[in-house]
Length: 138
Image (cartoon, rainbow, N blue to C red):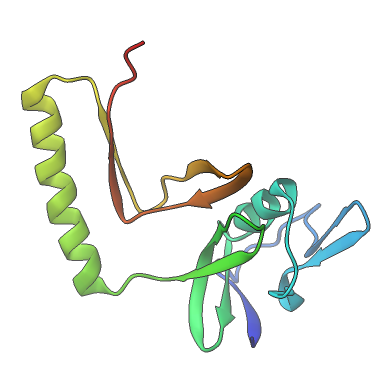
């Protein structure tokens, strides 16, 4: 994969920030992510935190969010095209109206809402375009 880094706010200077994080024996260099190795949850969170103020170009696509599969590999999530985001916006509005009218206590999220799943003992983090979560009732 080809990775290029771009600051989203080019006129700002960030003090105390580095492109690298030393975690265990691995260094995380955002400009040279290795998609052939697994990442820890701490490394994954660091990478996504850095992408709040910058984006990467991965295989020619702008990326500012990753998911983590059950084996710890990064999944690049390209930015959503305008026409797709319009559909998500409309569905989220309808979902919100349904949640309010049904009063079932559940909640909805859009795009950046991350869900942690444990599949056969392995952790996986996903961020669907839109999701409804039923209220937990023991």
